[in-house]
Every structure is written in C-alpha cells, then in structure tokens.
Length: 91
Image (cartoon, rainbow, N blue to C red; front, side, top):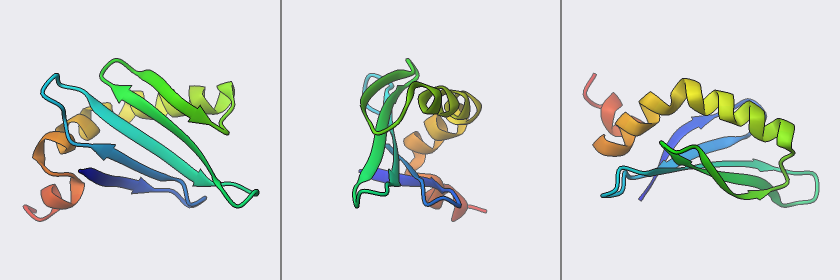
C-alpha cells in the first residue's frame, strides 16, 4: 500500500509505503519534468538509503535528505497507522 504524504506547489508528490516487518519505510518523491516524464527518487527510512534516483541532481537529493530528516518522525508514524489520511480521520 502506498500512502500520500504531501503535494508541493511545483507538483512534487511525496508518498510512502506501509512500514515493513523490519521497520523500514520507502518514501517516494516524484515530480513531472519538461520531457513529459517524471523525475523520481526513493529513500528507505530510517537508514536514509537512496535508491532509484532518476532526474534529480546531487544537490536535489541533498535538499530532499534535509526534508526527510525533518519529516521522518511523522512519515514513520503514519506508515504504521494507515497514512496521514487515516490519522486525520481521528481528529
């Protein structure tokens, strides 16, 4: 299952997986590019292991690394409870 986390003004979509039995969560970052496709990257939390990086520069990944360092605690929590939309229903 893939859960939405955030959509940014530049149409970047940030989604994440359910937490695995090993305690890992895959975070997917995807943005439409000018070639009719998408730039995308996947980061495995809590190790911050970047895999499948396409179209993003090292500087871009550094920016996303900082973003994830500031949001990982939320993403990891939501990955255990059915995503942000499920948690929002409890408010």
